[in-house]
Length: 292
Image (tube, rainbow, N blue to C red; front, side):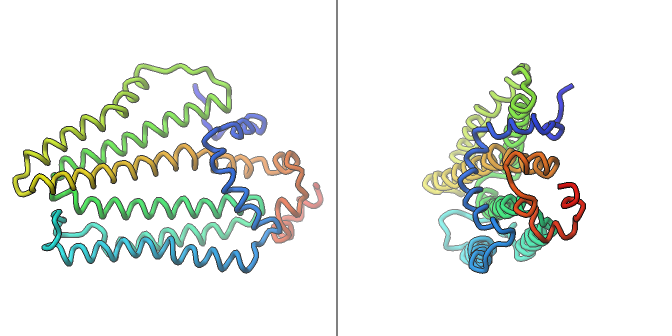
């Protein structure tokens, strides 16, 4: 039976440092970690982070909502039809805002110094996911009139399948990396790979035929524009899903093991108790001072 990627020993967890995709996050991590060297970031960095969240997280997501409202108000003047009812409503935006702020507040409970850069970057990843979901809802408003619920549902189903295939492939790679398991591709893996590679092409061909022949209400130019929207939407989704699974997952898996084996990683990185945990955390866990 294959071991879970969450069951590695300390020595085995060190193999995560050899993950090539995880290394893509190293530069950003080191840049962020420099602001938490003393445990608490500077006032300037806190103000910068606040402005970043207000403008590029909350502001951008709110802007997508505003654009959606404007497009629906001017639906009669658009060359490409838009769904009568918007999927991206003010209530949806507020739910996304509430969930993201809830994650930010929950992260405040983590006080260990070495976790802080990971916590900061986790909020960036979740903000990206929130923004992607809002774009999905906006694109769906354009896709439904051009296609149908069946074809839009098929696209979403394929994207879910693609995400699952990426996750399974990444988990298998991580198990080989952690436990030095031999690569034994099964028939189902080959079939899934072929579906992921060629499935979108087959689906795209069917959608193109639907746009060109199945909807007489759309002109040819409008059909091509709708197809362009579809391709852009798929590329944005596929790229974002790949970034989260191939880069984000091993990056946060490493901090899971640092949380699981804190003393082993502290000694390996040559950090003092205060540098590793922070004064505030040590005041609440004096047993670390006694053992250290």
